[in-house]
Figure 1 (cartoon, rainbow, N blue to C red):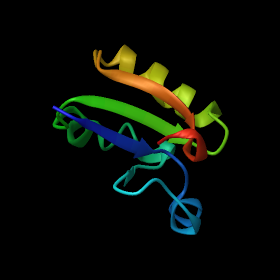
Figure 2 (cartoon, helix red, strand yellow):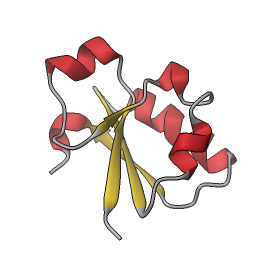
Figure 3 (tube, rainbow, N blue to C red):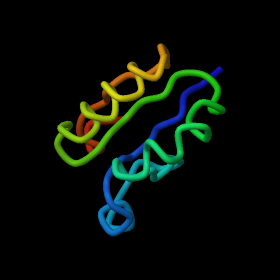
Figure 4 (tube, helix red, strand yellow):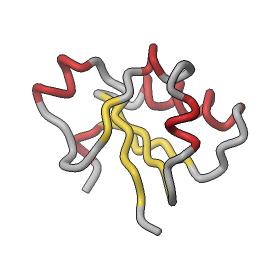
Length: 79
């Protein structure tokens, strides 16, 4: 099934560098783009600069019933 990497940093941070193939959904847009996230197949790995914003995103998505999410921490640590 594969995985989708969601980078929850700002668009400016994302443009400065990101994991190849990742999707930029800034943390502040996550709630309004929830339906888009729910359509994603397979595992969802969240990342940001340090892991703090992705941890917040992880908590929110788990509360929304998504069980296939994980916090990948910093985007530079994802391979």
